[in-house]
Image (cartoon, rainbow, N blue to C red; front, side, top):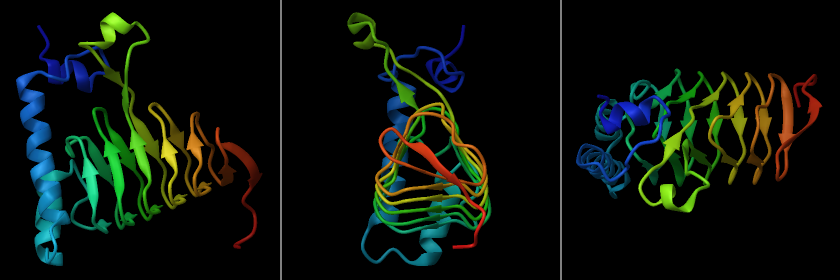
Length: 186
């Protein structure tokens, strides 16, 4: 029989109040608190990120405060940058490609809740999020579960990304829609 953690990682219904999952979230919050603490040196932050994240903590730049559920499902390519106050709810994998810029107050969600109210009392599930290389996610954007954002895509500030965004486009709004292809360097 699968553990609640394995069900969570597989995108199946699981009980988020399972003791193992509660402990894992508490450990991640303690690590985030260390990153977010005033006076946390760059060297200490790097060491904490290496423990917290699934991969990429060695070259990522994260400007505190930063918050996540588990951290272990977050995979970052080289030189990913997060500005202030980002929230990543990583019940499933969040993969962000190399050199992607994430603006302030961006929120990336992987958890979902059943529409049935009785089931929702005890169960949730998730869908992974993937962001390509060299993307730019504008400040205050919200990326919903199951979304894939392509390489070099630009997401406008305040956008709510509800569906996939292809490579090399500017997409903005609520819901986020492709406005144009990116052909010029400006």
